[in-house]
Amino acid sequence: MKCPKCHQVNTTGANFCHACGTPLNLPKKSFLARHKGTIITVVLVVAFVILPMSAFYNFINSIGKTDKEETVISGSGKDKIALVNVDGIIVETASQKGFNTISEGETSAREVKKILRKIEKDEKVKVLLLRVNSPGGSAVASEEIYRDLLSFKKKSGKKVVAYFSDTAASGAYYISMAADQIVTNPSTITGSIGVIISYLNFKDIAEKYGVKNIVYKSGAHKDIISEFRDPTDEEKAIIQSIIADTYDNFVEAVVTGRKLPEDQVPEYTAPNRR
Image (cartoon, rainbow, N blue to C red; front, side, top):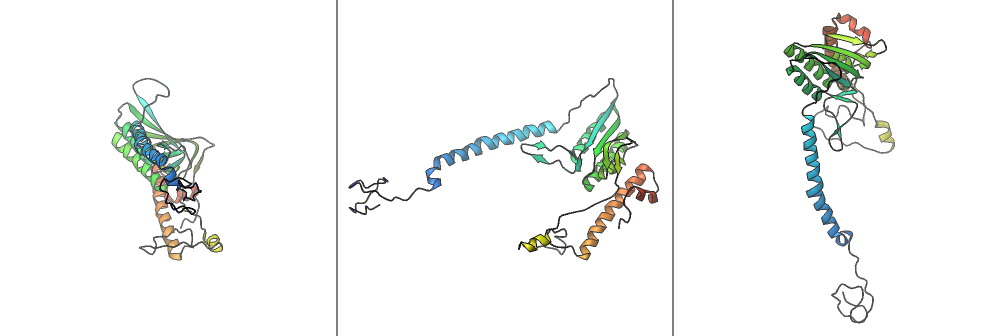
């Protein structure tokens, strides 16, 4: 940089002229330039230390979860009763938080399938006790567990008994229809044979504050459940038909599992399903 007083060119990078001592207004280095070394160190630590450790931790954790440990609650002897808990919301796959920590308050259809396969092969298990304490959840996950229980009974020849705890409603009631017998407490909240689809609609508030939802879609009904517009009459009919079909499957499971005439099932659910 050239000195404004003696016009000498300064190449040392100092903030004053090396010839006359006049202060120089050198451009301030950027944040990246000033902390280049620190940034490189942090990137290297993350890439070669933290990420590999995290991957190794998840790998070890996944190994531990591939095989459920068996715990004896009470009793002794050769024969066993297998206890499977259905707690909380029924989901397809358990959600995870942080380092491979499965969220509490959920029952995963995939995990139940793994447990059933293990019990199916255990000749010492004579009965499966399904302890249910759930308000329901995913219709798909509930039907999967129901089908898996039916398959388990057919392949293993083992009996299934369901015990209803505090709550056994909706999807939880659905999966219990595969049981050979149901035992419930007089105070248990159960039933709720039905299907529901709901979502929030932000159309009015979006219009008020000028928020626009720009959509590019491949089909007329690709955004059938959009939070930023009202559904059309055709979309309402499509959604209602999906609910009706799922409800029909539910009713069929109740009729088969509880040995009830189909016309009695609406007594345990809301009328006017269509």
